[in-house]
Image (cartoon, rainbow, N blue to C red; front, side, top):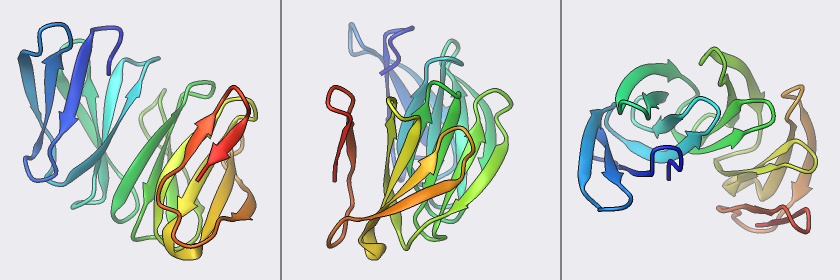
Length: 178
């Protein structure tokens, strides 16, 4: 949901576009072409842009929300599956399911800053605002990987049990749910 423009965005995995809807009326306001295989969306409030993970061509596309326009596509690791925005550092994190990595993209320049190696099949991301850390659940590694939001360096690995595929950060209690 884009609260600045009161719009909802929906990605279609097989549609080759992201559709914008007016949140007040439910009316479709735009269909923005992106590569086939869009699998996740993330809103950057600072830039008022939507990022979409394009799993079929290993990229992330950027959409400008004010005019619902395509901005650019950025190459990342294979099979991007999840996105997460760090509002303190204005960075986007991309979990690359097929390449054991997380790509870090600058929200300022919309370019790749770093690639962090994590375990097998990273499938979910969460940002921890109290610690400025990004948490990545890797399904086949049975672990959560902790990335420093300032340095983009892997800080720790936490055992998570069998097949972690979703993760959520509770800012009130500074806890993760996996």
